[in-house]
Length: 333
Ligand SMILES: [Zn+2]
Image (cartoon, rainbow, N blue to C red; front, side, top):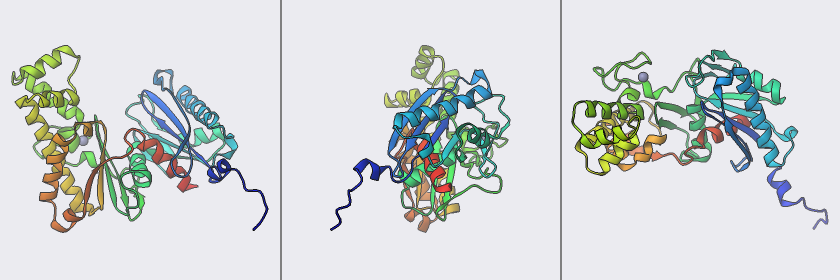
């Protein structure tokens, strides 16, 4: 037996160098410092205040990162990399964020370089849906799989593809736009350029639109009362009306579930994944939306991939993006 002193337990925990992960949202910035197993060692949350302009927001990202590092009690120099995630198209290799829809006026922003200049660390940039897919794959509902599809259903519908044990980005980083696959060729047009895409048929925005149509047509006094009480109807209110047995609300959720199921059946047939992980705020509706969607997807897809696939709800809700981009940064250095 050696008499050499053992390092204290905390030194062992931190022996695997930590990374910084930053989620740049339209209203909120969140920075975390994580250990290799996803344990959060330090965190900072502050408003984006996007109206102050691009330079001020990027300075704020760096300040938030430094605050998260300070909260972790570790020196900035011990960080191995920084991951930044944002909404919009991202060129991962070039580190460029293209026209983020929630940050008006931002065009093609070399965010990885601008953050590297501010923090002096390697920086990796990934879009939020891909980062969430990576997070669920490394730490959440898709852990250990080789083929996993991630779908987020919120005000919009986004996706990320883990294929053959790696993120699939396509030629321009624009792959995985699972929400903009047409599921009804006679459906309404969407600002993406398609008609009847999954997002325009089954997102939270779509559910709210159908609710407003039901109110305008006089088909639901209950939704009309809810609409009068609030500024605008949400998917959560449609769920609340459905809970009370409102026929129009039940029909709206059943329509959204139908189109979601059609989308899922297509992904199962195209990708033959081991799992499709579904996240996003609209999944809080739960069984009333997801059970019929899952049943329809399983019934319509080919038998072998249908028997194989697990249709599951995301495990890291709200943190999958920032944990995912942290793991991605660590894996990329
Ligand atoms: Zn679309």
